[in-house]
Length: 95
Image (cartoon, one colour):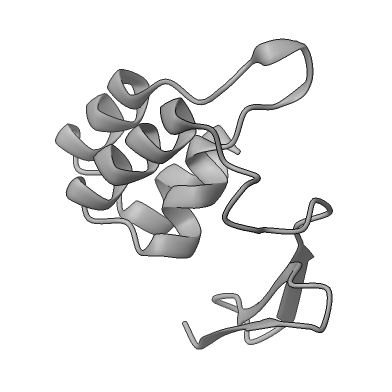
């Protein structure tokens, strides 16, 4: 699975990858990523996701707080990985 990420001038994150059928998929994180955007809690969650083997971009996506204060639970992701789920699939399931 080929993947590339880039930041445009406003520092928002855009991801492009080819799925298993070779079709190009794309995702743009709507909120610009800046050093002041992430809270200390989100930074700690991101570090925990990196420790589970996710790359930095994936970890930031997983750690981000969503509407109404919801977020991806580290233990839910850990259970998926422990059950043999690949990182890319775990990311798709929980995001």
